[in-house]
Image (cartoon, rainbow over all chains, first blue to last red; front, side, top):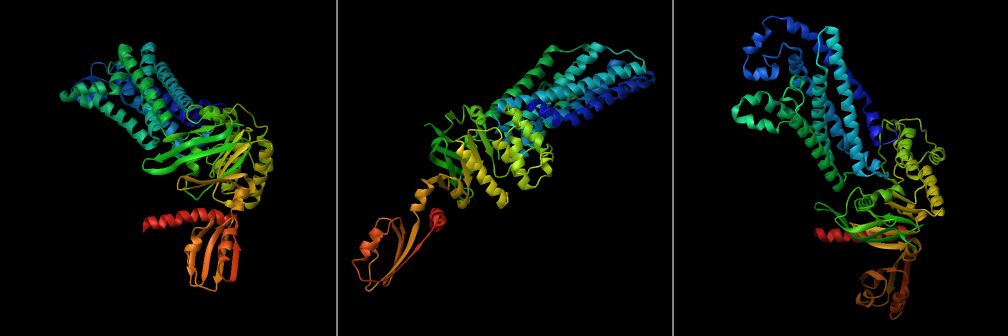
Length: 265
Length: 303
């Protein structure tokens, strides 16, 4: 695990990857095992229907909430999933370059014959692999839980929704990495990435019912993540590729800025 | 012979702050070069430019024939680096760290093991648990283990006890014998005097002088005091070669002479000399003289 920067980064984060993956399995299990209770509860959809639009935006859509996919869409792919994936990704991203710089280990790493770009890309690669582990965990939890609870879950829809969630995590993580690599400041990197996530979430949920703010949802990463309700409708290629584009742009900026600045001592 | 390190008008500003200004330096292959200067003079700035951690504001640095900006990876393949305060991954054991760095260099630990033994370094302990001195030993081993052509050492003996410093000096001299080039920064003259062939003195970001240690010794200062029978004018002595710091107090002249006292003696002989006293100063004072020039300048700036 000490062969290169990529493996060393995974080695450093193996505990974190393990715990977050277990958390993802647990989230999947918890939600799927809970689902039959909601499905069988009479009048729950009626209750949701009486809620204001803004509350439905966050709790779940009244029409689909009692279907398995609708329930998971509301419970996993609106708030909890993005939170778990987002926190993991942002912590990993802000630590990648800025973390090493602030703990003064970056100089000595870069005294070895390895380019800054390579260090950055290998660390980004480790972030992608870590998030992949979380995704597998969530998939196991959801599919396993649905089997245990005895209901059918669309596998392709679930995989597509997890893929979209994965891409949201990648995007937030690489934004944190990019800010950290550009500035060397870990706190700033985390702060900006969290702001992108939280503001994105608000714009796509509560604030989306404010007409004046409605156009602003297009700048929300959450809009591209799951506004099209991926687990029900399948992945929206344009939305997915938009996230890919943001992530790629963040990486390009990170490489460009990191290669051109002075490292702090 | 190509230069191991060569800089041309190397200048670095950190925003408004001065790092180094117009440094021209030429270090030969196989040479042990000492960069001397007080803290904040710009030693670390030079070194961090050589390793491409920071980029020059203007001017260039060439290391082992490669440009510090465009060919940094090539440079770092052949350079071992040790800073004064070696900081690295605390959670790794010393062995794991050396293994990691050896892997990044495409090497192995063949040379690291005997070095660790020589410096009595326990490789099984975590870096975070090591004392400062032991941590510095890990740094030393990683700098030397890849058998680099050029060693860049930034105040390397800070934190080492005197015995280890001696062992370190021996190691440096062995490497030098092997034909390695060493670039060592220090603010301790005695250290540089022991291990270096040539020394550059840097203050306030500018290279004040670059000289062989032996030449520097020749330039040692003599403090001279002459008592005359008559009153003498300072002007008779002020413009003599090598004579500085002339003060005349009634019958007594005191001054500082660099190198030969010949011209001073000949001028003094025109008068009746009653008494002459002189005192030699060592390299330390030469070095301090460069520093104190700086002090005086600073004082007059302030005034």
